[in-house]
Amino acid sequence: MAVLSSLDFLMHHTMPKDSYVDFHHHSCFEIVYYVRGTGEMVIERDSYRYGPGTISITRPKLYHDERHDEETEVIFIGFLHDDKPAQLTNGICHDQNGTVLPLMQRMKREMGTPGAFHAEQMNLLTGQVVMELLRLQHQPSAETVSSKLHYAIRALEENYLQSVDFHSLSDLTGYSYDRFRHLFKEQTGQSPLSFVIGKRLEHAVQLLLGTDDTISAIAQDCGFSTASQFGDMFKRQYQLSPSQYRRLSRGTL
Image (cartoon, rainbow, N blue to C red; front, side):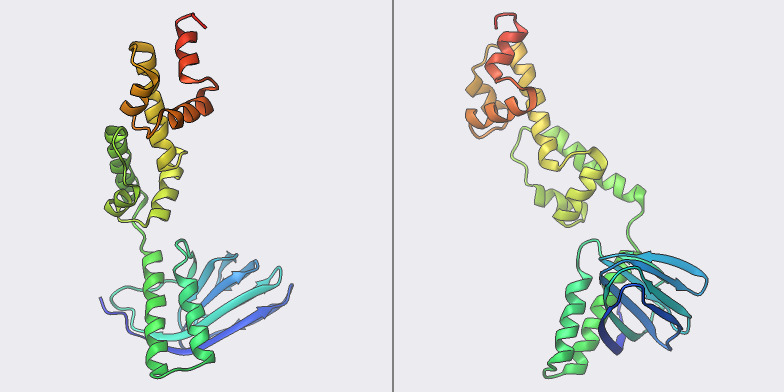
């Protein structure tokens, strides 16, 4: 899918606290990146709250305004765009992976010190910004996200005793590692690493209670690199060392 966009204008402002930009419209699309500050904007009759890391998108010829509850830094661009393949829709979205701000900051630097093929570079960067926004607005459904995470959780439940490459696992789900870690914690209440350690410690408890294996052997069987590492993590979880836990469970402490 080709994203054909051409820049019309780019500006960078810091708006004073309690200031107001009255209703106006543009003949092109407008994107406003709220670097810092909070407030409210209206597009036609719909009202939206903004904050740091949010982006407003306004389609051409629609009236919109902007109120600033506190000092607000914005970078905004106007551009022409053929959105027949995938439409940009009005409203606020969040720069979840931090991909949009670096592009707009790069555009601002290029505008300040134009290089060779300046117009072409600005249009290319505009297209990249639009593509990132299209990706943000067309995120997979909650059901799709849940399905991908279910696969990852099952994989960890079945392989927690093995060496786990979390970055490769995140690649299989189609998310960056940071996004995968965030979604995983949202779903389970734990980071992927904490989830695996918890499973290993649960298995260690079973071995401590059901076998006479040495602490070192249990540490190795449960995927810990050393008995010392195993002991530290076990005590952090159960407030007892592995040997104390075993003796207490057998009434010999």
